[in-house]
Length: 112
Image: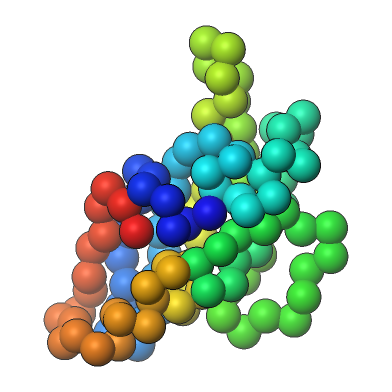
């Protein structure tokens, strides 16, 4: 889930829409990541900074569904995804993005 400290990089625009790339284990990326440990490709969605694997994607205006891909690296699965949507859907503290003056873009690195 995106409330944990994960390698993150991305950009948010002045209208608080963000595109971020995250990397980590499925357990770190998804609240229910343990359900998908056998998969190398997982469909997912986020709401209020928490991301879930999707069997059924609800009607969302906050963030579009995205795909996580995983590779087996030295005994561990390394997973990554690019997520686009409004800040409050992607980040647990996304509401705070609107409280600050943001020039044309804001860059996030090394954590949410």
